[in-house]
Length: 243
Image 1: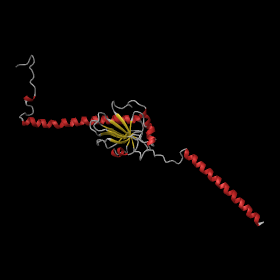
Image 2: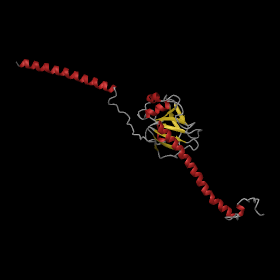
Image 3: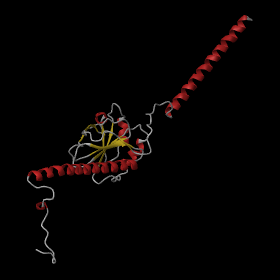
Image 4: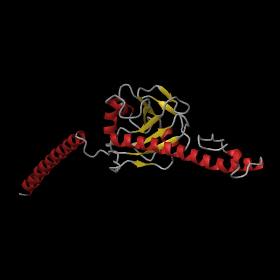
């Protein structure tokens, strides 16, 4: 009787072991399929982007030329200082969900609604921080794309997407900020241009206001007092005026 019980227990343990192995294999297969579908992967956290364009605060700082590599692995250097055209730097990444719309917009071609002659350069981080193959698949044909982590440091980019407008005439940043759509980028560029014009106009007015007192002092030093007839042109007498 005791031998029969031992035999039954042995058979039970064997069956339990077979069942356990089968469950483990099934579990491993399920995990493999889920992983293939993307479950459990760590996606780059999406930054919440405002529906309105947000300007940055470091405008007026000196711009920096870009040094890095192309998505194809070749060395790249792009000058933005001392050039003949303004440059819009689009700091993008391959893992940013919001950036997908900007990659698509850049690949659509045309002038993108920007001022005539303005150049657009897409800038990602270097290959140590970015997937080279992913950037290569996203890089639009006919657009300049530079992979450079140093550029992100030079312009103190807080995250992607981020846009920096560099003036060709001054070699300085005249506008920067983030946006959720390309239309907002166009608005940001337009506003930066208007602000730059307002600053130049205000500077001219300040120069004119400062020049006025200096001219008065020079005239008084030369003997011309306020109301001196020599300061005004001689008017010709009319037909009824007496000479």
